[in-house]
Image (cartoon, rainbow, N blue to C red):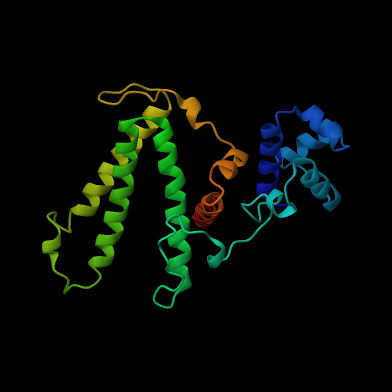
Length: 234
């Protein structure tokens, strides 16, 4: 059984707000055995997977890490709603992949910027926005430079140094955001106040963003899958 199962099993219990002993009693196993399942020390049978899925109100696919949706739904490009209903681009130059990835990113950004509004911090919004804009700038410029005939007059910075400069600024943005959300006060950056407004679980995300949460959950799953595979290849 994969590592996702033990992680998700533990998270579901903590979200439910019950102790390991209480969960074990409800699932008709010993606390020691549940502890082994949650730590990934032992593998469980299919009957336990079904029982746990029923108890926590999720699908077996979600519990096993096969789907980011608690219902187990697998998204296709046409099932992902547009963050902007005025945008109609079901076909993007004959390729589905750009449309799918665009929807995942745009919808996830919709959630992120709503959370920034809740945080009510101009500094946080500025730092996050700078990081995101620079990431788009870097990728656009790399694609732009794919054709050597493209005019460089569009940019003020040299293509030799621009990427490194943008990367350095993004690192600074990330450091400032990290300091803010961890409660540290550093020069020019105050710690984030009122973080209670940013409390969330998978349930509250689904409730608050019914049209966008699927995209966010899929983006998270896809991103972590790439990171896990990359780590194993090294």
